[in-house]
Length: 174
Image (tube, rainbow, N blue to C red; front, side):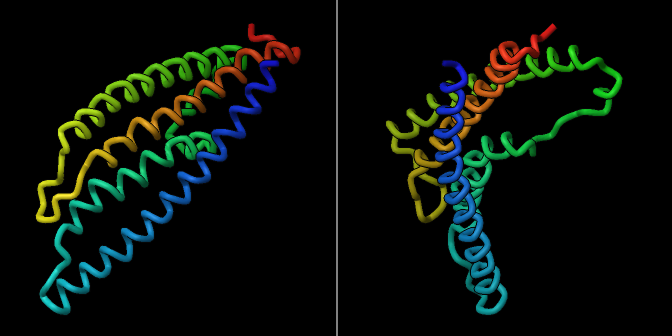
């Protein structure tokens, strides 16, 4: 039963991650094209594109980072300190992994809660950017809790795998 739930969670997260990675990739391409056009306009025509820096910073970079957090976690791409692991017994390593997972889950749940409140306030107050374009910032603010929530689900799934599935497949954590 738990294995099916973990597999279903994995499929759902993978589907959402694939969409987020595509959106992040599109934001990266847009950022490259836009910044190139801005630099070309600045140096060739002495006329840069207004709001390039701000929009790249407030939207495109946020998309690129927060929408790919979960995908990076699944790929094992986040920074890990593994220098001392070779000196620690495997059973202790599993407990350390579980402890780190629990801490990470708590941390990202706190980020979800705090950033959701910030995003809701920005939406209610119709917060706009400081530049001449004055575009709304709330959609950008919502990317933080959404990306962090997906990462929290992945960490939870990983913890379930570490604790429940290994325990019931004869790999009891000791």
